[in-house]
Image 1 (cartoon, protein in one colour):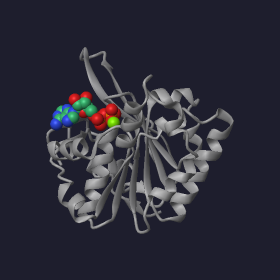
Image 2: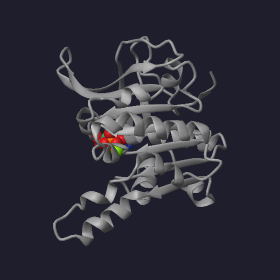
Image 3: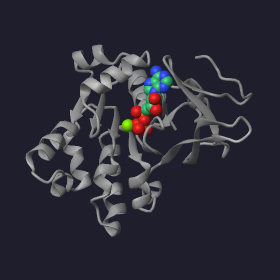
Length: 240
Ligand SMILES: Nc1ncnc2c1ncn2[C@@H]1O[C@H](COP(=O)(O)OP(=O)(O)O)[C@@H](O)[C@H]1O
Ligand SMILES: [Mg+2]
């Protein structure tokens, strides 16, 4: 199995080299748990390695994304400007629709067939992040959900994309966590209290990663101005 770097060295070690190439990995977690930042690490490393990258963004403007990336020491702007990295702004389209209706969010605005998202992805894209796919999921009837996810995953694999589906925890729970079954692997981000230290910490765990030996243990990580630091097996934070 070929791998594509996650952009986080210690996570690459945990995943035998990175995300499985040409497959879909799901990242879930509550708001603020670090999902978009995991996406940024993946895209930045892939850009550095010369791969063509794309983000389909439903929650942030390109300006916000580029700013957040730069703030983490991962400046995506040169790749965005050269066209090696493209951002599809579903966010702005959605905001315009919200602005255009008197009662706020217009329900049909995101009521699309999930597999049609493939039409947004140009030929040659190697690394793709869809953030947040949860906005589509909550409009799909439960019995169609698996088919829609499987359909999009199939089309993305056929196109040669290594993909991250980023999904907020609320949408994930609302869809009975069914996405777990469609994807090749999944990573869950949590923020919870460390009862020994009496303080909140960020954790990740890997409930599923096919063709990969992974530990069921949770790992602690931090978000710093130099990016994500995942604690190594020894417990100490590894400087990357
Ligand atoms: N340079 C930084 N140092 C420390 N924390 C940061 C930094 N940049 C962002 N964060 C934290 O990361 C969190 C947001 O991560 P994000 O990936 O946007 O979350 P999600 O996409 O899961 O909602 C926020 O809680 C924010 O405070
Ligand atoms: Mg986010």
